[in-house]
Image (cartoon, rainbow, N blue to C red):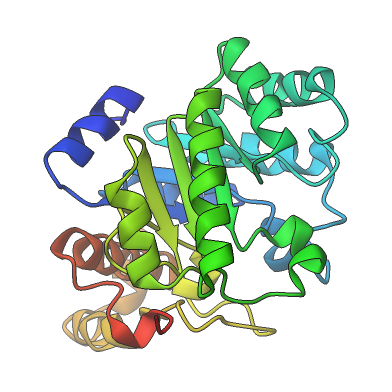
Length: 293
């Protein structure tokens, strides 16, 4: 059953962890559609892992719409969030609403995500006022990482912690239904989560948020250039089961033609299912995939 904002809030109220993954194309979207995953983010990270850019800054709205429409075709039963790329919302409320509307009308997204607070909270308010659900994003915000001094953990100093609280309050006032915390020490993320009435997601923010996000290409070990500390490659943990399943088949060619379960699609499905199960049980992320407080 496709999640809604109401059902996601119900999960929060019942303390049922929410599982969230990125996706950028049709084939992997079919994997996610046939899993118990709650949400999909068509992230601007697709600019790096799918389009080959050195970072997320060059990604355009047209490219994000292309990726998002492909994911929607492959995952019609999932709650999909479109990631507003750099330059698509900062200049004005008009730009923000117009581009957010493209995600909804052209790509069939259920919500959008944008980075930052401050004046970006005004952009979020305008998008929400136009009838489009929004998720905010604070902590490490890759689109403005240069201002932060690069890709680093945010929230270890009292000054940064206070700023995070202020940013969360501004975004809550703007009408967002959720906030993504990125690269934040677990204790800080836990305190932020406790004090918020919103759904709080984490990526590199420890296990105490309401939901977890991970980059699909990190989960599958598909991106060779970089893997952050918080990202777990699940493939090595499901390969023994996959190989045992293949070994049990008398005719691998016949089995593969009949089921298409003899290759990467099946390995990806198994890895995603393990991720979802570990999020729901609270075993991911553990201390090996969390920053130190």
